[in-house]
Image (cartoon, rainbow, N blue to C red; front, side, top):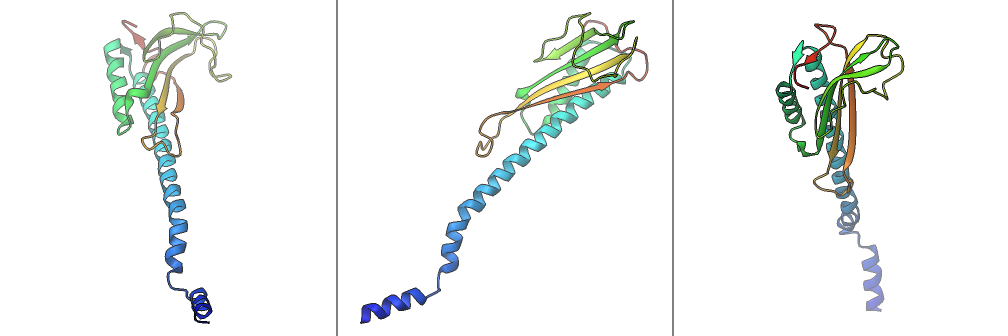
Length: 180
C-alpha cells in the first residue's frame, strides 16, 4: 500500500516538469539558432561579393584609361569589401566589350584574378537580350565566390556565388587598357 501511494504521489508531482521540457526543447532551439546564424553569414557573404563586383565595374566605368596594375589594385579593393570573409575563394575578371557593326559583342580587353582573361576579339556570349546595339561599349565585371561556412552545420559544402555586372563607360566612349 505504501508503494502504491508513493507511485500515485509521484505521478501527481509536477515539480521539475519545466526542466524536463527545457531539456527536450533546448537541443532543437540551439541547433536552429546555429543554422540560422550560418544562413545569415552566407547571405551576408553573397551581398558582399555582389557589392564588390559592382564596385569594381563602377570604378572601371568611371575611368578613361587603365592598366593591369590599376586593375589589380581594384581587385584588392574587392578583397577588402569581402572582409571579414576570406577572399581566398574569390575569382574576378573585368572585360571591356564593344559591339561590332552587326551588334555582336566582342572583347576589347580583359584582365582577371583567378579567372582567365578573355582573348581580344573573342565573341562574348550570355549577355542579356537587347543590351547592346552596333558600336555600343560596356564594362563587364564578373566574380565567382566560394563561401565555406566556418561551422559547417547547416551548410556543410561551399556555396558558389556568381555575380555579373554591366556598366557603360561614363567619361568616354570606351575605357582603354594600356597593357591588357
